[in-house]
Image (cartoon, rainbow, N blue to C red):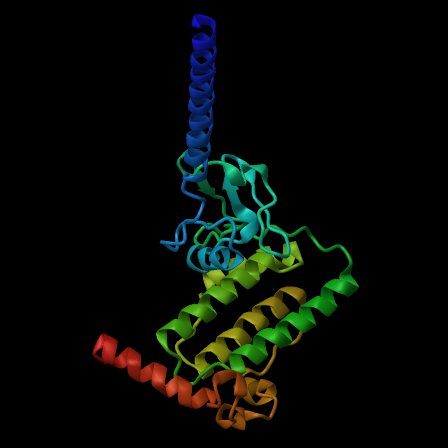
Length: 259
């Protein structure tokens, strides 16, 4: 009878051990499934790695592209369905270190101090380039606003200096830079800017032994006969004319600076 009693007891203990093991394994699975998924949609500065729209939202706020997102120094990419293709996608959120690497950022204020293009040895190409460049610059100055805003004045001033830095003919650019230092650009209004451009052009002509240009007709020569363009409705300006927008900007500046 003792033998018969021991068998049920042994069987019972064995079943209890099996049940305990099953319970332990089940508890481990629940723990894994209970880990918070990588879903950081709560703020625009965090990434939801399984959601293409959320990544786009981050890009909008940060200015960085999808390709610049790195996690633990490993790049994540998504397929057409928006699914993460990296093996790191299953790593718990607490173990992730999100690092944003900008693709390229404009480095305003860190421009060159001297034109960096090489000397242009081909005199024919140099002359053709010069004619086209002067035509562009004179046309810009002839179409410049008669009453430019502060921002417009600053924009033109920066353009002229940057134009001199990147001009394809390096030796021409370095000579032009010297003229800019000696005769700083005048951008207070259209007429002043146009005459300044003509004066600087004549300094170049003097160096090259070319005849002097008559600056009294510079506006008529380069306004392209389209002075009424400023009154034209422009769909790229929301159905307004340049004049209308310009008047609004001037009024806003006068209110801001008490003019």
